[in-house]
Length: 105
Image 1: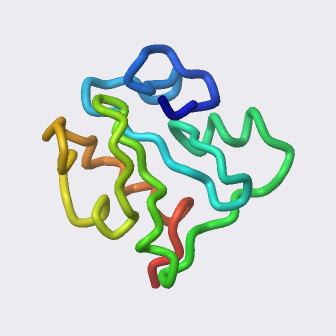
Image 2: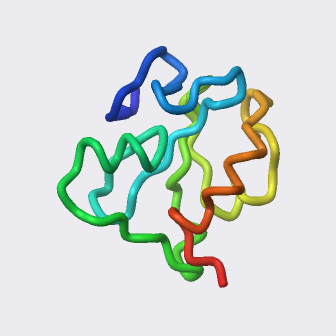
Image 3: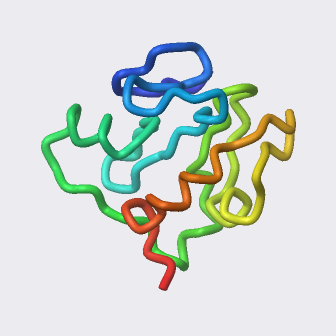
């Protein structure tokens, strides 16, 4: 089982900041190679700035489905609304924070 750090509140990697039914993904932060449920958890636990994934890194497995522990590439995650393995739905509003995690321009 892949460890998710931060203020995780359940076994599907929801955190105290984002905990709706669909808040089940965690992101491996490039700067520390560590999975966190959200940028707020990263900021509270680490003493360095977030390093965003660059477009050329988007084939890297950096997204974790909290429902089944499947790792997705960034490209896979950005082009789906649910897990390719268990079909659990992801929160579409996560796109509002892409600029914090991914340099996709």
